Length: 136
Image (cartoon, rainbow, N blue to C red; front, side):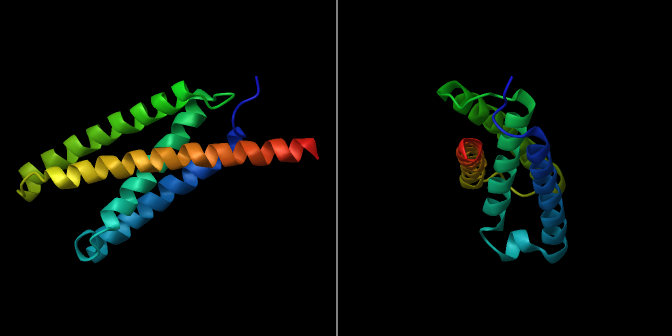
């Protein structure tokens, strides 16, 4: 069965993004970037949603993009994003003792889903590129 994207290239991209997120998070925590750059958290959630979208495509190896695939991918990103927000809330409540912020949570979920949507667009671009190369 022909898959949507080349599995090896996709796996390398997933590894690149997760390692980039880990390094950025480490640097951000050391330099307090989450507090000094107000939009840094948004970038991180977008990147997280993007790599989750790529991971979904890698795990399920679809042969084409359908509305069902888009909905399933976004649901996957949403569920993981909600799980991450629950983790953040628990850490903030019990360790940092800062109060829950509804606006931040909604923003985080929005950027998670935006990253997942970007992963879909990235996949579509990759398909178009691959099909054009096959025709030549």
